[in-house]
Image 1 (cartoon, rainbow, N blue to C red):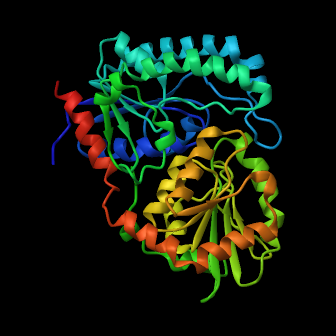
Image 2: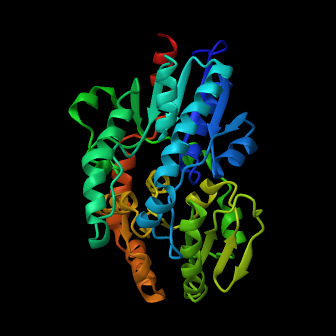
Length: 396
């Protein structure tokens, strides 16, 4: 095992939600275990999360998208309130990143879905490894934003692609084809394909490393024979709160042969469970892997990380994408095509429909067989594969 005592590694994940930060932390922890000095830069929800994991972290100016009361991404409001200001904030991010990097003197920059850190690193002449599962953002197509979509597809997305292509290596934390979940988001132009490595999924804790699942079933009052659903609700607050509000009364009225544990994605809310009917809600689940292993099915948004984790733990999923979040819809469609999940629009949620989907996943063997087939390929080596790729840049 290689030692990195003399290496300074700068991690710069996107701070919207915790998915990007969450998948860089296992890589950072392994590098730290091997002697490297680590510095994080992120924003919004990511800052406190990194700090609580014991890493030094600096905060960058925040970038985000506006959402309406249903959690739907509101492109019109985003353009009005964050168009020019977002460009200015992006430039602030680049300048902040350059200052942080100059102070830390990294040997390599590891960006997770942040153009600002790619630009800052290259302007300073530093090697940059980019972790990415969406090369070109997909904009929702509707009558009210069709012209906007065409403008973005034709211009801004080209610039974004060129920005990603400035990296020295692009690491895709997904399975190789034909099992790739983020396939629809990987429209990578030919000039950049030589930079791409499919590294497999970055799984912080493998199923065989998780043992205390009885505690989870006891917490949910799930007796033998009862089905346990883990509703792993995560993401930006403005996207998850509308879904929680929708799901809570549905799950409370589920039949008694079910038990449901719902994580509400509130890092500062504590971990004390509250039970109402068959539903147990927990503001923040500190170890989601216990719940993934203990449950029978997962209910989630369409985030790449949660879908991939569910597959690695061989749990079929019901996916409820954030309205107008095109990447999540694409992920949900791919998971359904692969035979490991079912999907439903948020506006179509009802007790009857959700229960019907749950019964389908639990009673039809084809989902378990497909999950077993994918896991037999041994794709969950993302941490070690990432370290290997980043190490090549350090040794330059």
